[in-house]
Length: 335
Image 1 (cartoon, helix red, strand yellow):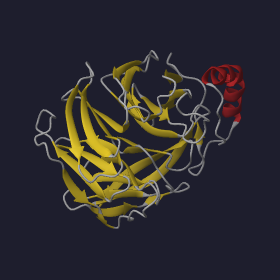
Image 2 (cartoon, rainbow, N blue to C red; image 1 turned 180 degrees about the vertical axis):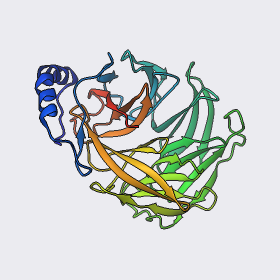
Image 3 (cartoon, rainbow, N blue to C red; image 1 turned 180 degrees about the horizontal axis):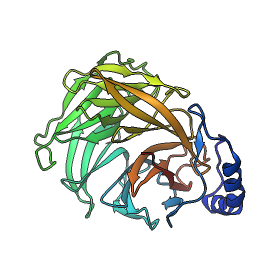
Image 4 (cartoon, rainbow, N blue to C red; image 1 turned 135 degrees about the horizontal axis):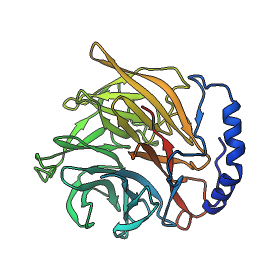
């Protein structure tokens, strides 16, 4: 799919003008096979916005949501967090920006009402916990010797963070209420079959927890999916059957055994996979790839209200990222 840099208002006009023709063509098309990408239709059974406009120049990267249709998006430009309602298409600043700060992965924890964020201030890596209602910073954990903290996941007893230029995971222990039980992060080195960082490209990126308590990672440089033992860091590649293969990846979103791998199979696609487990070993089956004309280098996604919402970073597709338009795109979720 060719990357489009059409302004958002123009995109909306073109979408409305071509909706009938698109639906007619979709109805006449043959059913998709497992190796084909499923183009998202231009209609919705609910009165929801197809896109949610974000502030110009925000340079979004991470997105999370909850409760309900409330969302949170972090900024690479100045580390602000914006929030709003996905069903109404609103946005406002929750955490004001700060010079030198950049945010990447985000996660909303329902227990504590905290939005966790990974990123940096200058060359110093941090993991923050921001109160979802007030925007106040509840916790600020400095991560020593980190290089490029990227995505994170909050489990029952810990926050886990990937470092895309350092083959280790950062762990922040949590108490039963979801607050840090220690001021000092711990580290788990990645080993086993994990493809070692090559010194240049982005490596470990998205992270989620599998139903058995192990961790699931993708690798932006080497592709593939990886199961990681949380105590030893031993990584085992998860075989993927069908489809074009998982050739990259940014953010991950997991619902039950349905996995969404943003840019796992193409620059403007979200790969959808179905996870299975036999004899203690995980495997994945490629289902389809979601794409849409409103996707422009998506980075992360969140499930809310029965839909998948993806944030578009527009890396390399705009002349000036600090003045460009940005938005969230709604895609259909799979069961």
